[in-house]
Image (cartoon, rainbow, N blue to C red; front, side):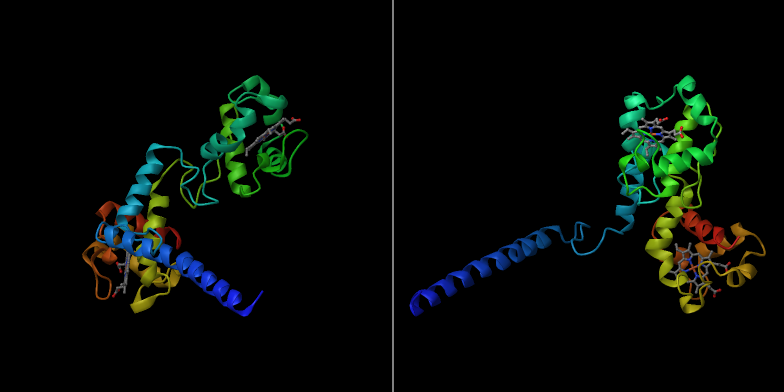
Length: 248
Ligand code: HEC
Ligand code: HEC
């Protein structure tokens, strides 16, 4: 290649690079211009109160498997996303969902054995139903959910300290804690009783959780009313109970 060709090639490359980098930046800026003020923040993860509320609502009305954080999916949502593909119809000789006759010999092995087999695999049953991203607890919840539908009386391991149901106040409280309260209570900043610190929380709970929550709603010294949280009193209460639950 001659020198002039090389420099021509260089400037073509330069042009292409400029276009490759410049066009997306330009589009980003235009999008940003049109979305600013509408509550859509392209830059950060969506932790606004509105976004949380919208997500909670979605969780309440539809299947939660995709929106629940990893590790926090319920037995029902894991079943509906994964196990159903075989157990829904009894495919490949799997005990069919809701079929007490098919489940009885399996249930007779006991919960712990079933969970062990579901995690590690058993004959034609693949390990974790073929979904390696499921946590042990999630598999155990799905085993409890399916087992109970087949006549067992297993206790579904709870999700994140809450009940095993879909969205419970504990899950909601945890989200609010992680979006708001953690700023001070996570580290004990500004004299806030630190998350999980029994000694720090003890004196504040001597009159009961409700009294401490009422104080939190009004605000106290460096604790702004509701910790600066903009949502309802009930939601604040859920967050407070989540923190208090860690020191019981
Ligand atoms: C690819 C099909 C398939 C999928 C997906 C699947 N299973 Fe299974 N499962 C089976 C088959 C087949 C058996 C019967 C194995 C046997 O008894 O030989 C079985 C049996 C079981 C048993 C009884 C084990 C025992 O020791 O008797 C449990 C518990 C179980 N599955 C849980 C689950 C859970 C939980 C999921 C979802 C996370 C799941 N399975 C997904 C095919 C599947
Ligand atoms: C800006 C920092 C800050 C944030 C954010 C914050 N807190 Fe606090 N919180 C404090 C401080 C400081 C105290 C201790 C106040 C004192 O005793 O002087 C406190 C105390 C409390 C108490 C105990 C009240 C009592 O009876 O002593 C509760 C309950 C509480 N916070 C709940 C929450 C909840 C729930 C959130 C999130 C929705 C939250 N806080 C967010 C700083 C904060």
